[in-house]
Amino acid sequence: MMNLLIKRMSFHDSDFRGRIAGATALLAVFALSACGPAQIPSEINDPNEVANRRVHEFNKSLDQALGGGPGDASEGGVETLEDEAPAKEASPLLIAVSNFGTNLDTPRKVVNSLLQLRPGDAAHNTMRFGINSTIGILGLMDIAGAGGLPEIDTDFGETLHVWGVGEGSYQELPVVGPSTQRDTVGSVVDFAINPLWYVFPWPENLVANGFTWAAEATDRIRYGDTVESILYESEDSYAQSRLIYLQNRRFELRRGDVAEEDYIDPYEELFGD
Amino acid sequence: MIDFSRRSTLSVLLAGAAAVAMPGAALALSPDKAVRLVEALIADINKVISSGKSESAMYREFERIFTRYADVPTIARYSLGADARRASKAQLSAYTKAYTGYISRKYGKRFREFIGGRLEVQDARTVKKSIEVRTVAHLRGESPFKVDFLVRDGMSKFYNMTIDGVNMLQLERTEIGAMLDRRKGNIDALIQDLKTAS
Image 1 (cartoon, helix red, strand yellow):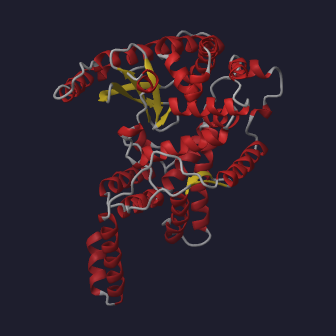
Image 2 (image 1 turned 30 degrees about the horizontal axis):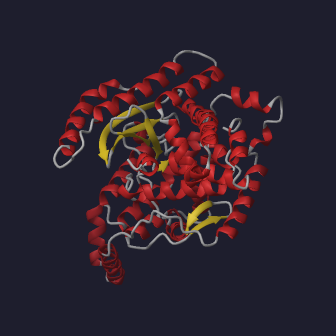
Image 3 (image 1 turned 180 degrees about the horizontal axis):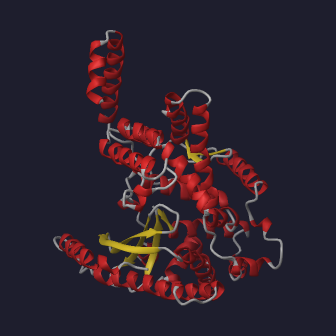
């Protein structure tokens, strides 16, 4: 199949221009990657904090309007309810929706891994896509994950990082939530380059993309306890979510590592030990 | 439940970690002690989960486990930051007491997420003067994530915990700082409210 494709490409004159463009793009990716990844800062850079906090309040009220927050615990004593409430568990349907959308979103991640010159990651996710789309019944089940092949999550924000683009300032976006200037640009590009737009005809491509967005929306429910504790049990949910986002994002960009200078030693600070 | 079949891999990894730590290191580091601490913590959490107690009884047990395994006085002092310097001795001890209740309620509550899941010890490594014990959490319906415990060499309790890169000490310094700001720097008001916060 691959051979046939290559043969066809080389025999068609009209494809020649395309190949030149492809080669140029590939060269550009190599040149960009040669610059090395951007420095990952330790500090918080948030010059637009006042505006960001306003967006945060809007996001919180939106979350409450959609049923989040402590408001729904009105029946009976709030304290006993919170105490006795069993750990929320994601329903099988919710997990299936999440798996299906996440699986459909895999080609976008493969494209990003290739742009980052990480063919190993691209192959890993391609294998997952193959297994889950077939044995996993069109991606409804994450068979690959259960078999020890967990998803490697990536996005164009990470691609930009690999190409040497710095984090920029912190942003809280309406509805979407915490981001940085670089990650916001990344999300816009991710939206545009998702292969689903181009392999399916309109309007099926919109439906396919819609499933990937739905999968992301399920996170609010699946990680409900964590989100609730950050948004409604903290006295400064803005500062908490900003710190959590930045630390976790920097950890991801370091491929699951913490920089030596980011390790806190309280004994040294408190007791000079 | 913790998977003890990983033990043999673990000891090999530990031997490796020790070998790396030896040359040039002036300190006698003991990663195995830190690993045993984390293993005991996991075993205690699992014991409570399999006890069949009611959830509210479990939370009280989890709170006790947290204070048993975490160096809470140090975490409390660190969370208060520079404000600790202007606090009186009496204020500091009242604050530490109130903080202990606050932090163990807050994090003990989160141990319930391990019901039906498991925490697996991966390896241990030396970071500055501490040992970092790295574990992976496998929870129901979630992708595995990393939970690391930091233990100062020679100490028998952990002082920091990071979940996928997010560390507790920094979150708590931010939170306590915000609480103090809201009370216009009044430490007594902070102590009073920490008694019921979670």
